[in-house]
Image (cartoon, rainbow over all chains, first blue to last red; front, top):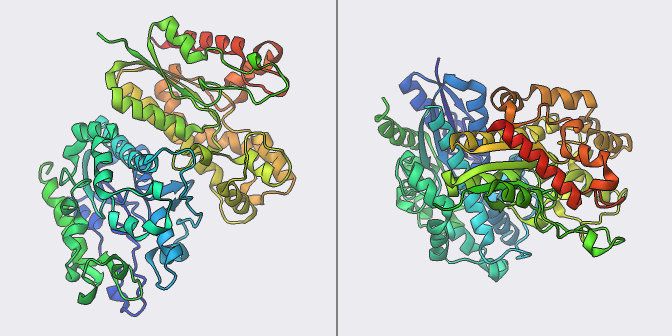
Length: 287
Length: 271
């Protein structure tokens, strides 16, 4: 049976189970994730390496390893990429912005604390928010390059091997609101305005070549730049698509959204169906 | 038509800014000579892009090469990588974050005075803690796979863009003798012991390494993880003539000439 290789973060993780203990188990997880839904539709065996908290480095590497492992058995690669600021350290992932949020806001159980305590592959090694030998904005360029390079490599491998390939962006590629939350706690030389960040991305040499060569692989071609084109944006005010997001939290207020004692903004069973539909529509060009 | 490019990368064996840390010798003998990319570029009449940087690991080397290939594409005529140790990492691509695991850990354990570092890095401390706890049983497999995967990706990118390429190992891929000494001293637990036989088994059976041998045998020296096949084995054999000093075994000006000749011959073989 031909294979579908899928990867992503918690939005793709087949073992996803919400941290909200007050919810009944059947509302915390166990539903088919988008790779399983489209795999069934297409009659493909699904190899899903999605894992909670992981970054684009892991996502790409897991796909590369499976392309090599399964060779010409691979028919389709489908990836739901995640945020740019999740960085791999050996076999664990560091999320510097969330780490800083957790450190400086002990009054609430933040997502970062929850992730660090519950997930083995998330590291608690602190990120040093100092300039050191960095020039201004070097760190953001480094993060951008790490993600784009991985996307580029996967795209090249698939093209080279005639493997069908579709990309989508789940969470916002860059969530500036998160950085704004920690602005006062970081070296001000490391602060960046949202428009500056977007300029960094749009003028990045790797971004320009990647978009020219492989922008067409994205379901929405500007999903890395335009929030409205990501899957996550469509979910933002749809409590019916999330695990648990009471109406009063659907304000866009980041601190509230992350109050993990009350809410879990991950896609629920209906949300997973919606993601699968996005992929299915796009895959019509192949099937 | 603009001049085509020789893309080179590596660690201190390649770094155009290399300057020996051995203060006991005259500064003229510590660096400043043309490195192999510059010598080779002159010979081949190619414009040189040399991203070599002292202390870096294979992740940095590969990332630099891939970025340049994606940026310059078919303007690149030739690519040469002189690979480094598998147990060096860099995080967020920051030089300060480069970690040479065995050497940094030996410094932490007080077994070695680090001549490269002003401070002990938080990541090194974390590794030191990791190595003392049972539980990780695929550490070496994962670590070696990371280097092999990067080598394969660079080879594949070169092939796709019709770039002539040659890979050589500069220093040995992994110094298992050093890791055995560290184990014997009791600094790391059983899960992290790396026996010689295990090192060779992991390399011999790695999927990426096998594919490099299958598809790109002419571009590499197989098995490239053996000390005898790395450049350091040549310079070490002629250390009085080809290396900087008794304290610093980096290639000197003559060593760089020899490396350049060796790589030139290798390129002629793949043309």
